[in-house]
Length: 232
Length: 51
Length: 233
Image (cartoon, rainbow over all chains, first blue to last red; front, side, top):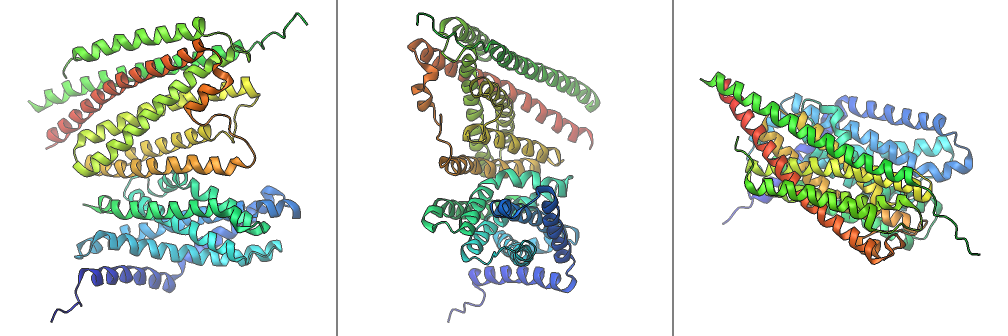
């Protein structure tokens, strides 16, 4: 009888799950990363308030931009810390010694990074809604945030893995990431704005398609290429 | 009716554009040359140290 | 290091001669456009952007080749291609900006997706250079560079399309492809069209010439690194 307990596929998912669990449980215990990124995000919103002089009318047109800039910067901090922790505590070497496909490490990190980013976004949305008296609980908006975050994290995890192994580290990640992630910013802001303004979904399809295509392409590429980034 | 509007005199821009082109190309070629010479000198030094 | 092969020396002369002819054609053969002498910038602006594109494509191919073969010579080609693309896109952007000022009285046009995409490519190239500077180990540097070059190469066409779609509603595109360029009023007569294509040809030759030189330089860099490692043992 052929037992499937140790098949490569099960091991793969086990490894991915283990990494996600490790990241999320360490974070819930210390909550240091979460609180830091959260405060940072709130400060960004605060700065925008003074920097842009948002009267009620301008606010509606500028909300999606402000949100996505906040997400982009908060995301960078989260990514940096997430990978730095691996490197500093030597977890990376440990993970690499395990007889698991490298891509399991990629998916594990990417999913925990995604979870982290979504948690941050889930907190920022109500806070922004409250501060600016706008209703951001829009299903379309949430969908766009999901799609955009997936793409952002897919590329971000790959590039953060590289950046953390260089001399310049933290500073390098935004420099590497932002130019490459511009299609997400363009499409996400346009689509978010569309949903908030109540524009028909059919008109927003090009942007949603763009996000989907970007996500698929870069998840595939990152997954194929991750090996080269963690070889020793 | 017999006189057409003269084409706008944008020569300044044209000159600036071509000056930039030739300027940057020359700077780049010089940089290639300088780097080449520095590397050749490094090789001489290193080969000397090898012996 | 070996002296320049004959083919390269011939290419040097060919490039110089072609560039001289092209410059002559731009100033004396092509007629003055209705919008004034600044239109002449157009010929070199597009030709430089063309070289930038060639470099970009070469880098994309080299990055995949390196990841598949792990042969360091592809890393040398990739770096050479990106450096040349960086220089030529820089010139193209400068010229594009000056021409925009002359033609439409604005130093920058956000709605011009080629101009904006070129600027984004420059940022990716600078990021690439910074990445390389931050890594000492040559094998890791080559691997990471190839990965980033690949990721960057894939993002560029997507960025190009997204800006185009995002702007399509508000700003009708002026020129988006070379074929559009030929049909525009910027190249009204056959002499102007000929000059345009001759410039493209000239700069293609210049591209091959320069990348050959830069690859030779890269090989010299490799040699110095290897010697340094040997001497330090």
